[in-house]
Image (cartoon, rainbow, N blue to C red):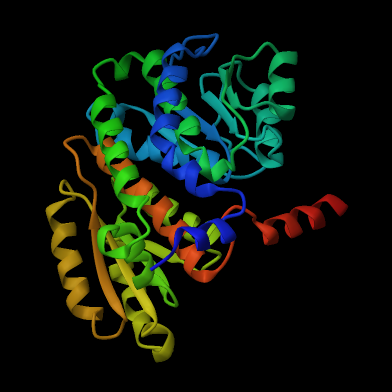
Length: 354
């Protein structure tokens, strides 16, 4: 059991309250999205490219996962570019969303400079920084979001303005309804449940205790929850400073499944986490069951998780919010402050020398 005093001693920058207030962030982000500017030139194609890294990039992934599960959204091509250079498929009709919470992400800025040479269909999402400067100098629409958070803790601000930007800009998406009330009700309920420090009444803390001193390996279908899977890994890695890996079904059934034989000691310290959705393909559901039978005696445990809600987006955010809290409590159990990212800062300092 973690005491409140222990949390305050470890969590020096108060991520606890940031997580607890996430429902408020999402509500504010939705309002920003509803009133935010759109592309200065209306889209003439369903080709969208999101430029971003880390917490900004995952919003593009989530967007693609959600829309791919809808009849209307399947008509769009939504891609996330994590790098300095743009793919050769970008043309004057590609719609670019440059997203950087700090506004100074070098890969995103590099991609934006290249994009401006090709298309004028660009919108920027940022708190400020160089991205806002470039946007203003080139008369690009800017969706301004509040600062003061770690980018990974600003998922609401990164995702919902982007979501509403696409819905307002593309006629294909006119029929998509965002379950705002359902999402906010779920998040508020979870905020109350996950902010207790006793594991018997706090599922997030109980799960963190199960994962302590193990290597979480997260599996989901390659559809629907693929981006949620990626977010789980990133939150555990950044907040808890703990190794975490993952892959997707059915692909891992054709290769990775064979890897649970050696080294045996590492396999026996592996916590396999299934992220499941009630609308997963029936064959994926069968594969999850078969996979469990094949590996459960070779690993420490197999844990199955699914989100609640009528709408896929609600279920996605239920699992995303659980990842935030589980990674936070893992940080507490590991005795590390979840906010600082010392190795990333070491890397940035080394890159700055070059």
